[in-house]
Amino acid sequence: MIGLGLPQAIAQLYPQLDPRQVEQFRATYAARFVAADGRPSQLFPGALELLEALRARGHWIAVATGKSRRGLDRVLGELGLSDSFDATRCADETASKPDPRMLHEIVAQLGAGPEQAVMIGDTEYDLEMAARARIRSLGVSHGVHSRERLARHAPERIVDSLPEILDWEELRPR
Image 1 (cartoon, rainbow, N blue to C red):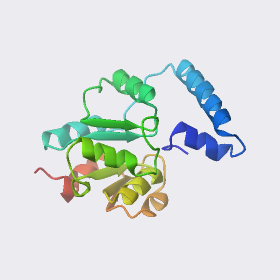
Image 2: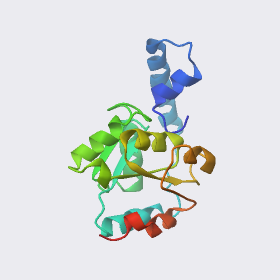
Image 3: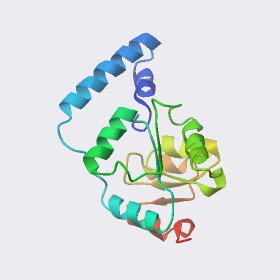
Image 4: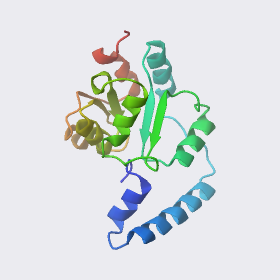
């Protein structure tokens, strides 16, 4: 379920709930999660260096997340990364993964075409979204889903660590 928007995950876990009940569940869960989550978020090893290297190479960097806007802003603020991305989209602002709309909106906001974009993701929902958007993708196996689950959506490559991304020919300096 990680990677989906919270309402979509709740609906999958509890299919007997009607939309009103899903929203009540979401609101209660979100409030309790934020209240109970007293520890700051942490990046995967090598994430900050990857972001800096991609930026130095002239790449735009965006986030497409199943988090809510409030949740993403909180995490980016805790990490000191609020101004580090050229575009961000959250599941409560648009269609949730794996619907391709989130990626289409990011690409349009940046004035790019799908052929200029690469989705880097650690869930099958990330890679399915990219496939449905006709955007190239790269899987990261040390996140949420296994290599086998990632491979179902035909990423161009699957890496086991973030530094390996910088070796991918498609992301070499322009």
